[in-house]
Image 1 (cartoon, rainbow over the protein chains, first blue to last red):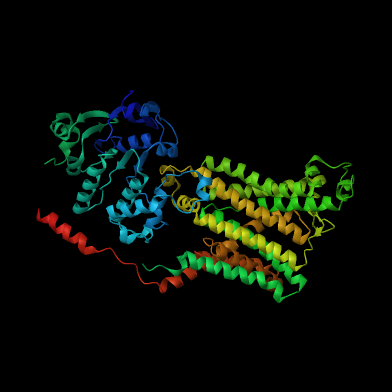
Image 2 (image 1 turned 120 degrees about the horizontal axis):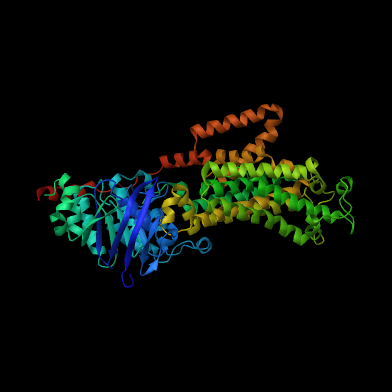
Length: 249
Length: 368
């Protein structure tokens, strides 16, 4: 495991006797876009929970840069450079769009030091850039709770970008987006993966086809297949459990 | 970009300065010593409302036991004042009545005025730090935390009644003289003392306002919305919650000290559950999200209680309860929320995002 950038080693997790993750392993190289696909209940979101510290695995290890980060607190894992976007967009509804982005700019997390700081250094420039990127420049003073669903998705993507983590965990980032909005997300992600590692959970195969470097298929909490999107689409086992039930073009 | 004037920071500060300027001028208008003492007591209530606004309004931490810090601060201060009037080697008379013949260890630090005042601030703050730390690292929040504060408050009330030999039980401590600082006597019925308490209120409110506007304040408001999300951004939520709770405790402790100096009396009534809940009601009526409006809430409700409440006697509690229900139902943001809504009417709507932009690209997509 030394040398690999990010590695999940044989993790297991049960909820009330129901084994949701069953010996799943994953090796992700730096600056690649790794897609996790699989039918409902395959354990995709649970995997993201286990990486980001929301859940602790029953057994198995998670490594970042060779360091064991298994079972650490959410805020610690986030500080190590793993940022997360939730499946149901989680923005801070009572705060304005600008404040949401400012909170996400978490370079300084020390509470005492933040008490004596009015503005974070470099935040304003980055905020301008990113609000442009996610098309929220004109909405900065709006309360986040008043945004449309699409805008909320963009805001959360913007928040993850402000956080600027080494690894981005994106849980269904394009759910509820229009075609043109999805196109924009594809552009942003393709640009991002030059300097970031992205692990993305998705249902939309058309979207996956446009962005994925490596696709891993999860089934019953374990890895069923892994490879390029072409290889995955040809794989008969995958077709049987997953693609066979959907129109794969 | 048009913005609701209510949210304009410069105007907010201007409003604070004008309001405090006016409050500071009161002793120049009136030299009624009784009135000044009473108004200074209101300033103490104002501090308590500010402290609740800081932890409940900003941080969403409903604290129904603010009397803990208030009472501890007041007791420590009263003990210091009591010891100032004791001749060397003598002990307070109530201890003799309760069968003690030497000063108990608990009272020893209060023989020295400086140590006593430091204790009055450190004891409540340290308690909040430990209590808050235990609760928030275990992720106790919302109504569960409120109930814990309430239960702890009741425990304090019981302990202070029961430890009669040390606290004089239900009778409380009434130091025979006023506080002396060096050669200066702090006469509770004087404009000087009014200004001192007023200055404390000003310092607490402005400090709380600065904290609200800092990065810390921003993160505290964020965790009120969704602590989980804030955690995933790398912030240790428990530390932020504990700190904002402790700071509000420090303000309440200062209020307790001032209260003991002003009234020269402290009793388990300071740990009364009803009193702590009324602090929450003051803040709710004035507007918990605004420090200064929470403070006005305290002034208004307590002022009304003194001048109108006497005529209604026990009915007053019913009136207070009913106005609380009205506020919760019709003015969830209190008077401050009402002012915000009114000012919103005068605000031009925000520029809407340009829908044309999206439609054109949609059309292109379809054309493909």
